[in-house]
Image: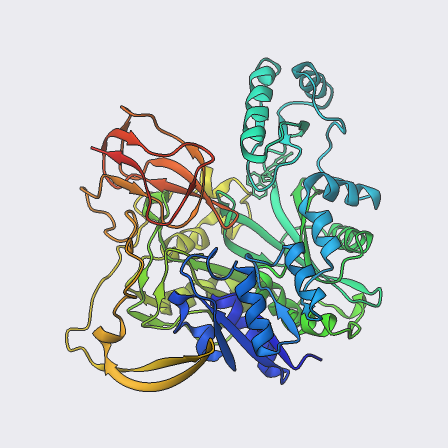
Length: 582
Ligand code: MV4
């Protein structure tokens, strides 16, 4: 087993890995950006090293700074968490070359699954199929028409080299095929640099089901049941559950065996997830995620398997301690993601800022995974996941009731959160009846009037709080405890300039800023408006892709668009003004 693991990540997942290391007697090494100097993962780790920088690119994605921290700490393995370097084969190779273990799959497996065409081929090779479609790339719209006439409408045109949610066009009828193909090819070229597209049947009410797998370096691989992640909007998951409910046992077994076959087919090791679409007792391979996922605790609660412990054991060469027949799914779990976003009637406006109060829920079957405590700040520069509430119940109804009970206890002040939207989903009869699909949150769930107003109460008495003051010696952090007035402790970092994004704080006001700013660095993938357009509060002005997710950047003010400062494909930094509304 490793002596010391460096966690190349931040927030709740860094905390999750540090805890697993501690339980196994492994030393933990945190790394941190300027903004995270006092973050919970830094406070909990045995050692911590500064990366410098504010944005993800300057810190957690700075290969040289991370390699330097590995060297200084003497860590013998690196856990990448999710996001950042977790699916970066070059990073995995770079550390492996230095004799340090990457706690994840082999780089070659990351590469196979990182490309949509090779990932599909890898699954086909072992008899696991995607949605039925034409194998060939499309040369002409007549091929779309022929496919639809032969297999039924609607059909979906997808970008061959695409990924995420982009580039898919739904074609309801033959006479829309030509326009749809042209549009899909244009988008594919703009997003992915290649215009090749293919066609497949369009599933109108699919569920997003994923299978967790573990594979060791001795040729053993198992599946640990399913998760249903259908409750999502714009490809951001809101609530996940395990197991996926209402799927016949024999189909669950077939999906599990298919997932294991895909993993074995690409010589996969460590933890991974195979994603499927499920409709009418059919399941169709989508892709494989070659990392530990945000929603992994849902699986842990119904299997009793500590997935991070198994990741560490597998990476250090141990064989899996159980076989497939020993894995039993007990009861039901639900994970609720709590993000620093105001649901704002469905707009989901980012709400970074200091957390002034945080009281986590507790009780039977209740788990709270977070990277923050009261007094910490949610930065606009990183993913705004505040924490995950994961509950277990003996069945799905019990778990839903427990989730609602625990959400009622959870108190978060200072920032707006997605809790009201999570409650709206859990309370909805469609969700309770397991009638929802991947389109349900966006097309059926009514979030009008659902919003949190950010509470910005500051304690007037200004009590003294414990504050750790850091000293860095050669970039290594040492901390000293001090009792200081809260206001001083909460003072923001001096540098940085643009600190607050529009759309983040002053929630709900009728006269928000006319400057439309992006909340974090990323790429503009869509500009929805033109100069002269009239917009309402909450209208999506541009779509920003950041950390593999698409985010609507919305108007804070109603009026006329007088300026657009970006084009599709532009890179932007957190706080940049992308449009002006007068
Ligand atoms: C589909 C589909 C229906 N039919 N393919 C969207 C993202 C991409 N990775 C796959 N996606 C879909 N492909 C066919 N033939 C519906 C979706 C889809 C979806 C899939 C998974 C999770 C959420 C989704 C939300 C909307 C659409």
